[in-house]
Length: 110
Image 1 (cartoon, rainbow, N blue to C red):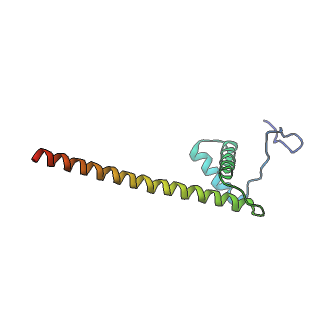
Image 2 (cartoon, rainbow, N blue to C red; image 1 turned 30 degrees about the horizontal axis):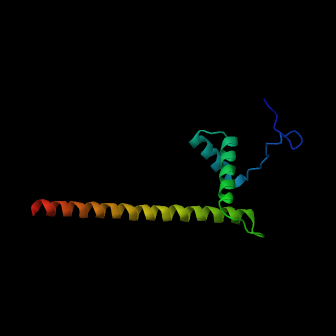
C-alpha cells in the first residue's frame, strides 16, 4: 500500500487537493457511473476547467469560481447558438428540397 503523498514527498507534477465534503458523495457516484478513479475524474475536471479558462480572457479582480462559471456560460451559449444555426440550416435544406421537387414535378407535368 502506497502512503499518501505529503507536500514534502509529492512529485512536482502532482497536485494535492482537498475535496469538500459537500461534493464527496457526488464524486463517488460520478466515479462509479463512469468507471474511473477519483484521480482520473479530478484530473479530467481540472483539465476541462483550464480549457474553459483558456477560451476566454480572464478579468483582473474576479475570483476563479466566477471566471469558470462565466466561461461555462459562454460555452453553453455558443453550443446553443450552434444548435439554433443547425436547426435553421436543416430547415433551409428541407425547404430547398421541397422547392426542387416542386420544380421537377412542374416540369414533368408540363
